[in-house]
Length: 477
Image 1 (cartoon, one colour):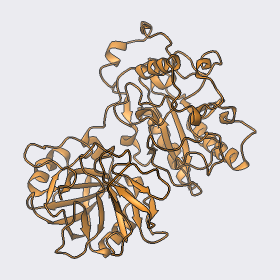
Image 2 (image 1 turned 90 degrees about the vertical axis):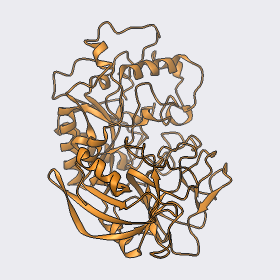
Image 3 (image 1 turned 45 degrees about the vertical axis):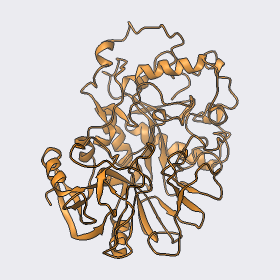
Image 4 (image 1 turned 60 degrees about the horizontal axis):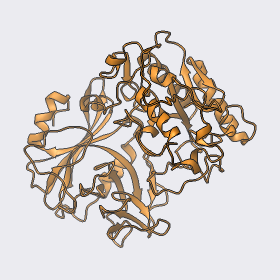
């Protein structure tokens, strides 16, 4: 978000009489605005203003979902940038795209109110009372027109992304690459939204590696019609659509479940006969055009010792005819879920998923009163605020290979935690709430799953799956 064009409305009473169609724009998404996932699901997203990990320290008004929206032409151009960078071994990760004007006003309120919860990380050498005087903000942002994106570049030399929580230690955004926040990107000289001269695109205060990375990103963006901003290396505005003149204020809402499925090219469908069954069948699918085709043979899995219950998944499913998942209920979650980090006992693994090598001190927190609830943490380096957790590395082989199922993410208290794919104890041994399988089958998942294909898990009883199948264009079993 550029210093010179970051929108700041200093008066809470300021209205928007100059904005064309402001009332309508506040209600619905215009047809020319699209979710980036529907154009290119392979572009990573870390939408900072939908969380508290930004310079204000709170989610901004209008960000009801962590989604990137852009004009359709800008989104297609960004997809071309992604393809070009992938050919060089790199890729894109976006931090912010369309920004409702109500979020702009929220930034303005922050600048006039007391408190600096994220100053240490984002603006350690700047007084926020001087944002306006120093020209770091403006009244209207191109983000609100759907033409501007804040992003970074991923690549082979990038440190793995950390998972941010409110208790994370704040580090100056200009600190050395291995010390500041790990956002999963290559070294770009500073972190995102860093209010500092080192964030200027042509800064001479950064390393040669960071300069080269900035230049690579800038060249790729400019080739597809994006113009950079001198004060912020991450900020680019698409200049190929002259119609993007109106400021908009419609809220950013979750992508409809049907549209989420359209962005996925890999599915794992797990179905049981009844809610109380502890045995189920899993089948992999790959997209071919508008349809999914079975990939290799189905395989057996075991579920929670008490069967299944509706979990906190990606979108609304019919929860009127079944149980609801709760902490400690011994039930595996039913629903549609993203798949997260892979983990295991080995130092490295043959997988394209992010991978965590388990040590004896890594735990999964199942205490719903903890700020770390439903998170993998290193108990040796994390301030402990929990009384209950699962030690991930034990004497048995269950977690020798595993994959996080993103149930209850972000975590709601007592809704269930620490849900994984993992190795079964035996075909007749149900779990405490996970989905377990033979080691050979999870090894095949490790090598098959590809984050760029937006893989999803669909898990539920057969009757509920059939009820959803036609409406959501899911594959037949």
